[in-house]
Structure formats: structure tokens, C-alpha cells
Picture 1 (cartoon, rainbow, N blue to C red):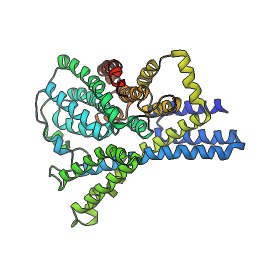
Picture 2 (picture 1 turned 30 degrees about the horizontal axis):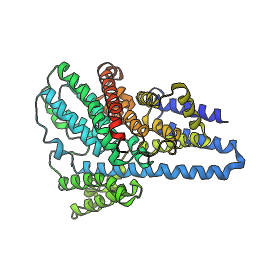
Picture 3 (picture 1 turned 45 degrees about the vertical axis):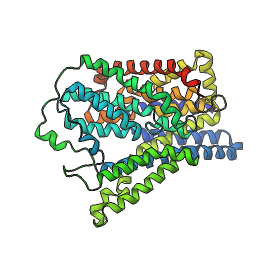
Picture 4 (picture 1 turned 90 degrees about the horizontal axis):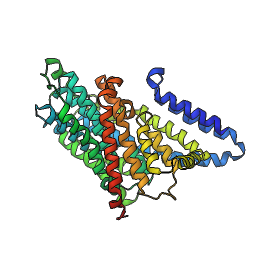
Length: 436
């Protein structure tokens, strides 16, 4: 039966990777895979059904911690966006020099994605470059570099990338340590491609036409008028997100409680900002309105994938696979570097979930090099192909970037950055290891 479940898992995986050609949403494939894997596992050992139920409940408690965390974060970001809070940042960018602008955009993307998350940041920044870079060809380069910068920025922050968040909530890494050990490799990962483009990028930003000026509002803003309370919401929202790691450090409670606390505070503030508006007018600016706009399919996608990986972990398949990799490749650093490159082809969430199941915490304790390096590789390796990360897929959809164009123009740069950052981490690691 184990072989059948593994085959089912692989088929589900392929369906997720080939979402566009087969025209079936990856969430549907993930949910089916997750439920069917557990069903077959339960049918194959009817005598142990009580034990299997306990395993499932244990996995569900771990999975729901991640899902509630993500839903809280998405709602906060949607709410700040509804108030056009991010315009406080984006309206200050005025340079007309393409190379200078590229550095500014990438720098802002890098730090924003550490606070928000790489997917949201990419959407905000692409909305911004539509206003600043009317020239379509030039804008594609900017969009490609936004993907690279957002993924690099997400990797070193416990709330910046789903995979780093999973490792943090799972107890494999601590917030302070991951920032200290990964910020330099992540910066190098972004700066190397930028330095290359500094010498090779040619072209103008282009002149804004009447239509682009009209469209530049992004998805939260409908008019040029500033919304009342936008600065308040930006500070409370970002403050709330930043306070989550602090909350966990002080209380030792799970991070999703900190995220829900931040959401509760922001919810109350949003209700108090426009008390005199009627319900219909107020709806887009409430947390209830924001909840209808968050990406629920991707939350269910994580549920399906993590359930499927959980079944393989409960059966002991992943442990055997890790042992086999250990015997054939020997060096964990090589294995994890390859996992990072693999994450550009397949989704990095299931890869990290599988790795967390493959390596035990007894063998590799919290903040072990394996977890730090995995956070870096899985976070930044996804930039190599445009479909390799949530940020890439979102930008691809918004700017209609061609898969082959990205492969030709950006993939090599992303790969250079990835290896440069990886090398930097491995060189610097001994210096950090002293402090453990």
C-alpha cells in the first residue's frame, strides 16, 4: 500500500506543477492528494485506525497553526492596502534614472518583503512600477528583479516567506538567529544580479501615457484621493506584523496567537477610523471586507499539501528517503543546495514540509545549520524559474511575463545570486556557529 500512496503523491505533485497545461487549479489537486493519501493509509491498516486518527490530529494541529498565521497576515496586509497605506512608501520614489530606480525598487522590495511577505510585496511593487516604468520591455526587467528581490528579502525574516514561517512555527529556527545568519547571504543574492544589470541594462523608463497614469492605482485604490487614516493603518499594521516575533519571544506562545492579536488590534482601529460612514460605504475598509479578498485557495492549497506530506511522514516514508539521500550524496549541504534549485521547478512549500519530515529535531536541534541553510535555499531558489515561487506566479499573471523570456533574461542572474548567497552562507557559517 505504501508504494500506491507514494505513486498517488507523485501524481498529485505533477498535477500541481502542471497546473497551467492541464487547466486544473493546484488547490484542487493538493486537496485531493492530501485526503486520498490519508484515506488509503487508514484503509491499509484497519487495526491501527485509532493510532492513525491520533497522528492525523497531531498533524492538523501543526498545519492549522500555519494556516491561521497566514490568514491573519494576509488580512492585515489587505486591510492596510484598502486604506492605501503603502502609498506612504511608494509616493516617495521619484528618480528618472533606470539603473538608480532599479536599485531603489529592489531595495524597497527586499525590506518590505521581510515585513509583509514576498507575495504581497511583489503585488504592491508591480502596481508601483506600472506607474513609474511605462516602457513595457524595461518594466519586464524590473518585474523580474522584483521577484528575485522579494524572494531574497523573504528568506531571512521569520514572517517574510511561507517556508521560513513554517520552519519558525515548527521550532526549527528562532527569529533573532535567522535574521542574523541569513541577512548577508540574502543581500548578496539580490545584489549580484543587480551589479550585473548595472553594466548591461539599456533603455529608457518611457513616458507615461494617459492610460497608464489612470491605471496606476493598484488593486486597493480606485482614485487619486488619499484615504482617511492611511498612515495610521500602515503603522498599526506593520507594527503588528513586526511585533509577532517579539510576542512569541516574551510569551512563548505559538506565533499564530500573536498574529491574531495584531489582527484584532487592527480590526478595532479600522472600526474606529470612520465611525460615521454607513455600512455599505464602510465595507471595503473593514476587516470583514478584507477577509473576503484574501487568497483562500492558497490557504487550502497549503492544507492539502501539508496533509499529503504528513501522511508520508506518519508512514515513515520520508525518514527512509532521507536516509537514502544521506547514503548516496553524503553531504547535507549538497542535498539542501539541490532542494533549493528543485524548488524553482516544484512548489517550495511541500519541499520544505518534506524536509521537515525527513530530518528529525533530535538529530538536528533548533537553529542547526541544516535549518538555516534550508530557509535560505528554499526561499531564494524559487527565483530561478518564474513559476518557482508565489511571488513569481503573481508577477507573471500581472505583467503577462513569458516563461521563456524569464528563462533567457533573468534565470541565469537569479542562479548567480543564489549560488553567491549560498557560498556566502557556507563561508560565514563557522563564525556564527561559535555563538551557538
